[in-house]
Image 1 (cartoon, rainbow, N blue to C red):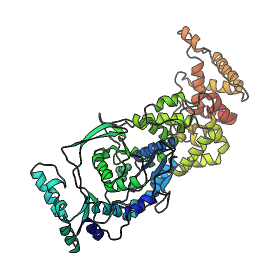
Image 2 (image 1 turned 120 degrees about the horizontal axis):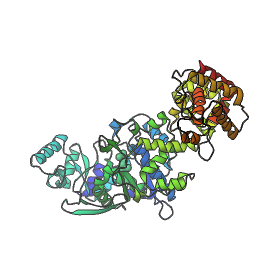
Image 3 (image 1 turned 180 degrees about the vertical axis):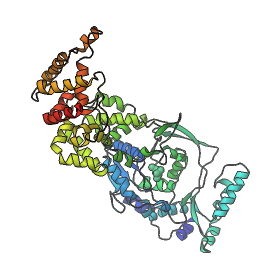
Image 4 (image 1 turned 90 degrees about the vertical axis):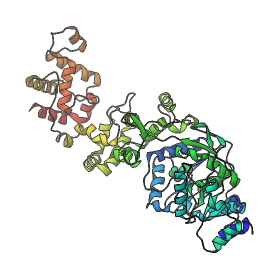
Amino acid sequence: MNYKDLADLMFPDAKEIKYYEEKYPERNLKEGAIVTRIAPSPTGFTHIGGLYQGLIAKKVADQTEGVFFVRIEDTDQKREVKNAISEIVNSLTEFGFEPDEGMTSETEEKGNYGPYKQSIRKEIYQAYAKYLIEQGKAYPCFCSTEEIEEIRAKQEAAKIRPGYYGIWAKCRNLTVEEMIEKIKAGEKWIVRFKSPGREDRKIKHKDVIKGNVEFPENDQDIVIIKADGLPTYHFAHAVDDHLMRTTHVIRGDEWLSSVPLHLQLFQELGFKAPKYAHIAPIMKNDEGGKRKLSKRKDPEAAVSYYAEEGIPKEAVTEYLLNIANSTFENWRRANPDKPIKEFDLQLNKMSVSGALFDMVKLLDVSKIVISKMSAEEVYENSLAWAKKHDEELANLLETQKEYSLKVFGIERGNKKPRKDISKWSDVKENIAYMYEELFAKDTSEYLYQVINSKEEINKILDTYITKYYNENDDKQTWFDKIKELAGEMGYAKEVKEFKENPGKYTAHVGDASTVLRVALTKRTNTPDMYEIMKVLGKGIIQKRFQKAKI
Ligand code: GLU
């Protein structure tokens, strides 16, 4: 009896690997095209790190006219969550990282290299496991959980490396006859890889991101097929990335130390190994130290957080590119209006340790992104956000569309557009004073700063509206009139004049203009008051002044 008999007994129905090798031929792509993927587990939580990987994979595939696909790694069936696949794919698509191939929902997929969900690739893994067994490169292991525990306890007591290797790999040295006998007797088995490695030898490997790394060879006879007939991550990775013709495995750096095992698997299976690019996780400053963004502690770790806060997808993408390549920031400065498609992302320029996630920076990026949007875009985005999160705002925007477009048009579309909105959830607070309904609810005080006499304030407001205000004035005339008003009130008409004559004036034109601004908005800081007045119109201006005077 030989290995072939053993393999036939274990997997009588498995096809020859030739079948799959022919079914999934080399891809016909141009030289240098990168075929890559993300391979998430359907856990029902899309981590920002997953989106980050999606962005990187999509970008390098697109840049090289390659392929980006999504493969669902659901071999750990205990962890399965409903609709998790759609959630992952929808997140990617919403952010513009739509995969070229792979699962598109829980049950559907596109592409010629599928199935793209591991649980339905069982027979493929078994064919390759059988192939290894036939050559004596894998074997059935009959050890029970208790026996494995026992081995571990002995290793611990003797303070030696844990695992199933060398003399500890009990089933490795069974004869084929013994194995066949046990199987026939109905003993339960799993399949282990027969590692050809030695721990006292080193392997050198060049990672696309981490550079040269050196590890001891793998000598563990790891499980490749579990008791439920499904593969472990390691085996599935080798089989899938080979058959799907992945050229670059871009994945989290927690897998870096598994590279010796993976290279061995590729070698023993007779596959050409892919290139590996191990990405450092996104980090966060925490009490003086650095730690990974955590699903449990950090709301911003969830991709869903950004939509809830109303941070535009474009801003998140820009920011993630900032984290990915520090050169992005300069590129963006030099090319403020180019689409990100034109930025050339370099895997080998990615941070080797973890890049820091900085919410303040993200919101700064977001302000710039929003500042470049048209009034119409700001309106549509604010409305879409409000419909889900703020009914009052949604109503206002919907019932007063034309007016709202004017509000959002203030200081927008010019050379130096306003940069005071960083997320849609800020919008209401930001524009509240432009709507009578919301302004009426503002119970805060009028804080006029320098000019505080009731009499003077009332006089400024009255004089301005009766004598100076004209809604057809251009900006220069409008401003000249405020100067005139300041003069009439006995204030300095120019700030310079005020400064050059200490003691001569109680206030200057800026202070008078603050009175107008505060009476109109209850704020000392707003976008351009000329434009605000234009949008509010005479009726509301009068009303506001009236209210401020009481
Ligand atoms: N399912 C693995 C993970 O989520 C995939 C790693 C890989 O990309 O190969 O970590």
